[in-house]
Length: 258
Image 1: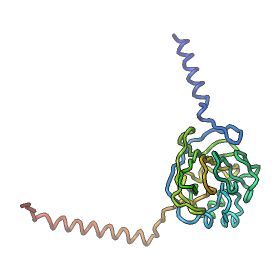
Image 2 (image 1 turned 45 degrees about the vertical axis):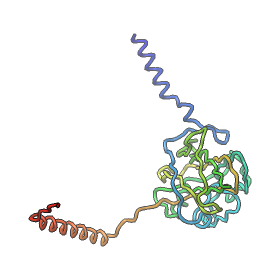
Image 3 (image 1 turned 30 degrees about the vertical axis):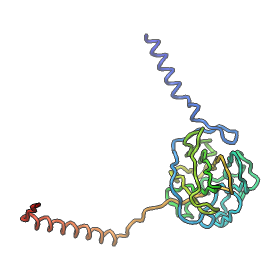
Image 4 (image 1 turned 90 degrees about the vertical axis):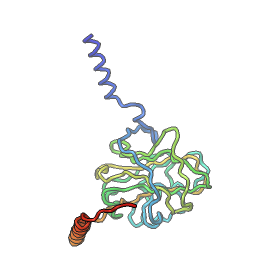
């Protein structure tokens, strides 16, 4: 009995130490370990993508003024439509027109570069990925989106609801440069300045002009100034005093319903 218990304990320990097949995904012909952050789908970010947010994976006809100003590379996969599947990595080369599908770029983002760009965007400690979908009124499917640490070969954050069935994302603001969705849950704490990083996106049922993915700065709550705090405290105190007076004054009065 004791031997059986020891054998079972060893088997459980081995199983716990061995990653399940679902924890490994193949991208660019390489195996990646999936991390613990799951990205969530949100509504459209404000602004116009090509004017104020840097692209990471985009189609043609994207001016990308922000990319040029920041010297921030991105993949331009051309004016590709009517494809069963589109699968691209980001690139550290500025407007990389040569990177093929499901191919890892030889030049990627350093952690220090990503942090510098997010600082320039006043992103604070959080950031999102904006998604611009362009369709023929037939929704395309976002199969997956990953944030990759190339140094540790780990997927730090993932949007992949079901490996066999992605999420339909109908265009809500059709036209290049008008974003439709955000992928939320990314933080600067995920980024090591000494590591290399990349993004990956897979779309199926592409049926119109090029889609795009781009950085969106996080929204930081404004911290009231000291004088504002003082006025707020006085205001709250005043409201409390008025409430107390009303309560005291109302005690002798008895309301009788007819």
